[in-house]
Length: 119
Image 1 (tube, helix red, strand yellow):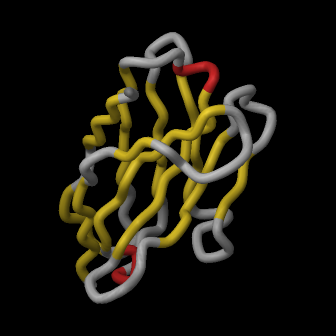
Image 2 (cartoon, rainbow, N blue to C red):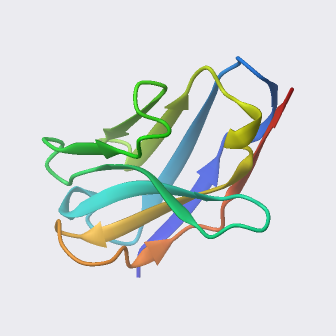
């Protein structure tokens, strides 16, 4: 099992920034793609960003492209999501996820961290 623990959520005004962190343990971090997803109230969970195990591939949803940046520090077994120019519609619970290799569904999930953007 891989354990994932998110941190860094909170309340921020529109236009502000937050950096989320996700610490992984229990498996070899460098063998896993890492991703961020979010779920707003009354909506389904949606993909936000992912970075491959090799670090050579990064993907973003259209809604956050150019505003959010995913990165990983393999020495610290941690993945980050830098969120800039936040909007009220970015309000959601943000989840960190991991999948072995670069195919298939994300297998492991964190508990989530709340991000609230006020207008």
